[in-house]
Image (cartoon, rainbow, N blue to C red):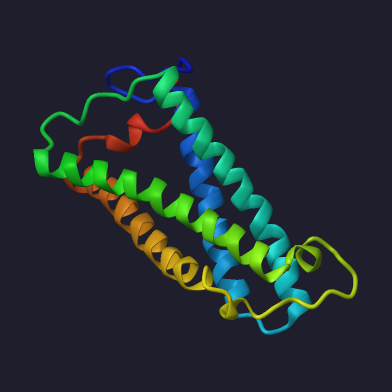
Length: 178
């Protein structure tokens, strides 16, 4: 498998970025909801101490991915036999992943900046973790998390539909070939 994609399947570089981003997104969603539902500020700070660096890694991967698509690689052709409406929905969901993720990162940075929470999150002694609900970016961050969860479910559901109902081996395109 080469680094670049072919007309039929994704290359090793994008496959690696896809699955690494997917894993990190699942961790982000889990730690984000866990932090939101944690009352103890020390535990919440510890959870956010994992959440924030992973969000930074996702930002880096997404910027690298966009650069890879724009400057180095081309996406494979759509799956043969897919209706046009499915192709449009797939493109829209992928675009929404980028928009929502960048919005989540921006609102997360906004919350940390406005609240001054960085010292507590990153190990500052004696700093009190603020009530994030007092800061305007908290609302879009919470909405974005739920939207991101819905997008992940739609994306995974569509992949499973293609794999097991349509039996067009779509998942093979986004996995490492021999």
